[in-house]
Structures are given as structure tokens and as C-alpha cells.
Image (cartoon, rainbow, N blue to C red; front, side, top):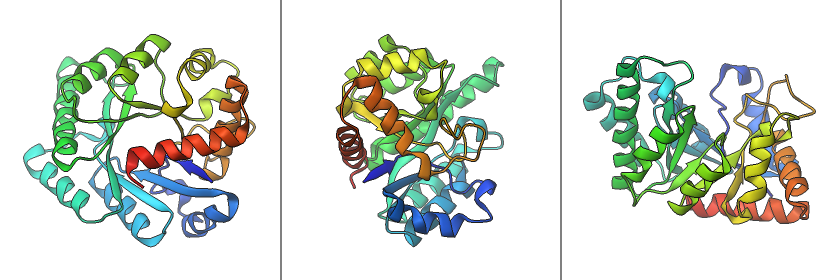
Length: 256
């Protein structure tokens, strides 16, 4: 049984077949899916999908690219209420820092403020976090080090082997997308090779970053097996071992 630990089924690319696709996943070997939110609206949708499909779970959070107009005194209590609204909410996420588009220091400071507020929320609720870290490795590390009781995953991991080891020391897991199937993914491959299997998870980040040979198409959980295949090849271990261990890792982190 495969566990796609990160897929955005609220995206409008799934508007034509969302219900059919989600319902069909178990018969294709995908026994578990976790759908994270990126703002309050998408978080509500994630909870609704989790309540509808037994194999789907949710995370609720505010993504760093979605902080415009956020008022923490108003929106954080709403997020907390949503997290408490269903037993199928298993994480706070997708949260973190994204410096790819944002260059202004004031905007970066506000990203960090929203990030820290949600880390505190995760600590209060005793939930793991799903962290988005794009070109902000050191600042992301600085934030997570401030909350040693919180654990989670750095999704779509893009850092170095050295940075990965620092995160492992803090108790975090690392998750990988279709990027590890790309020819130019040497850094990600090196990390997969270096990190113990019991600290790895797999994800699609659907509908984005479809793996080879589906690159350029809409991604979905139907393709999560390709990440398992890639890890098995990189580590030179049986595919079934990768599937079993990454699923157990996800279940352990998210309390499923």
C-alpha cells in the first residue's frame, strides 16, 4: 500500500474528475493520501475531502505564498478551530518560507511571523507540521529550532545532504516528489542515498511536478509509485521494502 503524503486535490485542475479519481485510488494501490491546505479556504476543502473518503486525511495551514491579507489575530483562531473540527486533521501545513518570489525584507519577516505562529499552534495541538522551504534553508532551520517539541516533514526536499542531517538531528523527516526521477536531480539523489529509509516519505505534490515518464502532465496520486521506484533504484533495495517503510513512516508521523 502506497501513501501519497502530499497532494493538493483542491486545485482546479481536478475539477473535472476529483470525486472519481479520489474514490479510485485504493484500487490502484494508493491506500492513503494526505491533502494539505494552503489557506483557510483550501484547508476547509481538505477537511471536507478527508471526511468524505476513508483513505484521505487532511492538514490545515497557511502557505507562505498565501499570506497577503492575513491577519493573525483573526485567521489563526479560525485555523485552530478547523484543526479541531475533525479527527482526520493530522498536521498543520503547508507552512514555511518561500524566498523564490519574495525578495523584500519586510515580506520575508511577515512570512516568518506567520510561520512561527503556526509552529506554536502545532505545539499547542500536538500535531506535526508540513514545511515548505524554498530557497530559505537557513531561515527555515532557525525557525524550527525555536520549537524543539514540534516534529514534522520538510516536503519536496530541496536542500543539501549537510542540511538534511541537521534536520534529521531535530527529528524531522524528508519527503520527495517526482523531482528525484529527473536527470538533473543529482542533489536530491545524493540526499536520498544518504538519508536512512526510516526517515523518508514519498509524495506527488499533485497536480505539480509529475515524475518521468509523465513529466509535463497533470500529476496525481496514481503516479506516486514512481517515487518509490526511484528510491529503490537509488538505494539498491527491493521496491516492496521502500513501499512498506515509507508508508509506515507516514503513518507514524501523522498518527494514522
